[in-house]
Length: 218
Image (cartoon, rainbow, N blue to C red; front, side):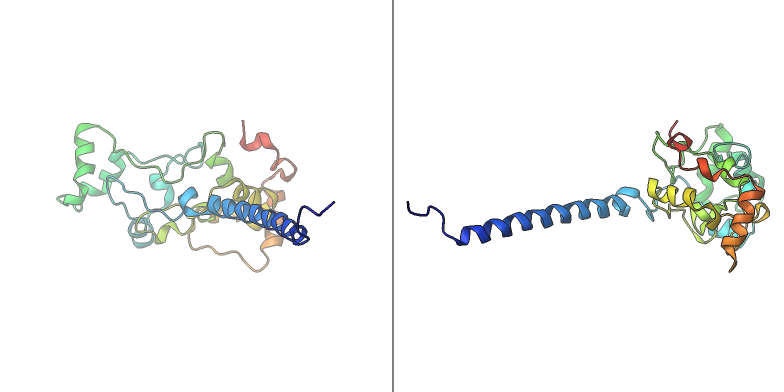
């Protein structure tokens, strides 16, 4: 009986199979990279706000402590957004006629809060508590980046699960003394691993539980 397929068909079939494997692998890699891109994570994307509040001016320029505006960060799951009255503590005295600050004055007169656009927005199925992290020695800049140098705040980190797990698996690499948590210029020392392990013990960081699903997904 005559051969139906040409012998070269075997080669073509093998090349097709290998090509499909590499194509699928390439597509999976592309999807993984897309999932980590700023298009999905919104990292480094500046979002419009009702007032162009500059952390660089207020924190780095004027030296205002994070806790002056984010009053609940040490006791609450949420850092808190300052009320208009907090803004007016200063702006009832300075820049009182600035057109840029008219929404702040209008909010103060009417009692209607400003509608800020949330920048760091975790998925609803992920539980995060600011006070726990702050009191265990996680600095503001560790998660939020150099906010004191941002004219307009943008999310610096991906906020993906793999980013959270990197810290939860190796907390000693990220912890700092509590008195340095709000110090935006603090840098990790050469012996960070040694210091971090000491802080893990001192602050009773339960490393054996940090990667349990129930820690973040409740």
